[in-house]
Length: 291
Image (cartoon, rainbow, N blue to C red; front, side):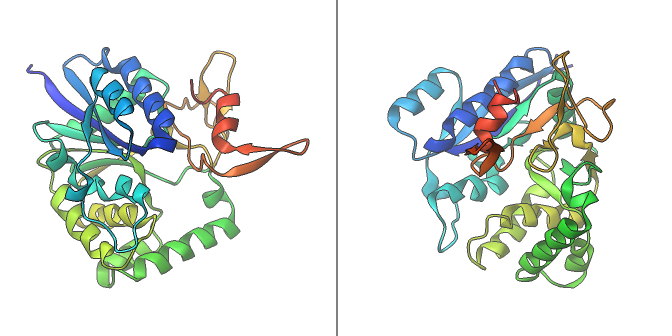
């Protein structure tokens, strides 16, 4: 069987470079065990200094720096390029069979996780593989109050861009998380995603617009693989159990092993007790969620 080539793409600015490097290390840790799939790491670099770029390229990472090629919102902050690049991955890094988008705060903690995402991205019968935020342990699922606020914010946000049947489908549909997904280079999701995202661009900058556009595209195209939450565990929505054997588990169903951790809201400062405050990322490191 010929080797299939997958490009795993991340994006970051200087404050998130450490996270991106650790995310890429978690991919490298398991990539050599995946048989007939060759994984290439790529990074959309947002204003990184030359020494950082040289280090990345020397480490075999393909780097994209021509940010002027990417569409922008009128009022977009510089870090917003990490979102505006996503619908255009096959154009930015051509020549691969499939693409895997990986947020800088993703950590693959088991080989099964990387294998799942690579297999899904390469699946010729699926337009996309993506994970829906519907785990029973998540606060936005088991808390009626938080679920209401979550859906109300989503509906208000999306209604500014979309209407009609697609919006009705999306209205009470638990969204898929845009931090980790994969698709073949020839998937119909890419042109659909670009079309919906460019419609959202005209409405002004919104942190969630690219995820919303991808969700609408997923509903329009169909033929998607819904990844289980253990393949993209949203840590800020439910802290996983850490067992003595080194595994992480679903706190609602401890028999379920988590394969991929998503260290969401990592810049938020939180109270960790005894009057101490720190970023969630520093707390995540203490808890052993990242190397």
